Amino acid sequence: MSSTPTPQQMPTILSFAKDLPNICSLAGLFCAVLAIYFAILENFSAAMIGLVWAVFFDWNDGKIARKMKGRTDNQRSFGGQLDSLIDIVSFGICPAIVLLSYGGFSPWFLPGAFCIVAAGVLRLSHFNVFGLVEESTYRGLAIDNNGIVLTLFFVLDGLISSLVFIPLLYVVVMGLAIANVAPMRTPKLEGGWYHVITAYTFVLTIIFGWRLFSNS
Image (cartoon, rainbow, N blue to C red; front, side, top):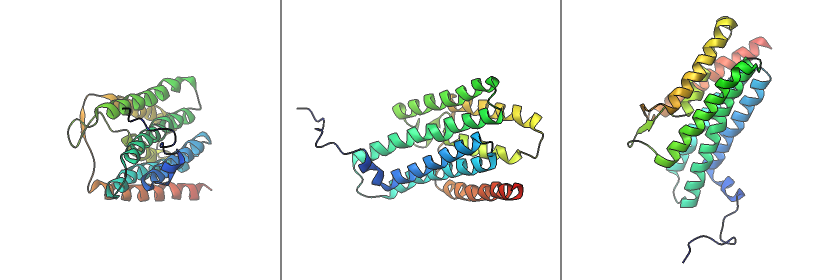
């Protein structure tokens, strides 16, 4: 007999929006959308605040899910798919928009934008099929590191000449794209790293928030 649920048995789409880990994931998506919005407006300090908080919520959704009791298999599967799709927006499309906007949407920046999105799609598709190489080891650089590296790099924005910053930004984005799909093994950051990411989020929020205030 088929185990496929009937339409009456199938949970509604919005029923999963009440799941706390998914709410956290959607909060991260909101931050990523804000980052994209401000990047298009060329307000890169605000964009980086949005992006670093997207990283923060991405780290927290899994942490919340692991601590919750009684989640169903459907909730876990749905949450995994939701997290993966949001990661593409936050750490693939968002960095691509940042690169394009900083480059004045010149066609010369299209290859870099495509590469970071394509690498993210390939990397997450591979992970969704094969998972971790070992218990705590990824194949390729985990895509959330794109947000961590990019926000850290943007601390240099305004401190060095734009003639230097723009090509360096292109190199950083391309380097991340290559690292996402490289056959190298990278450790899964967990445990005490959560506190590091939390501190990182607040420190960068203060730095970029101060820049917003000083430039207003």
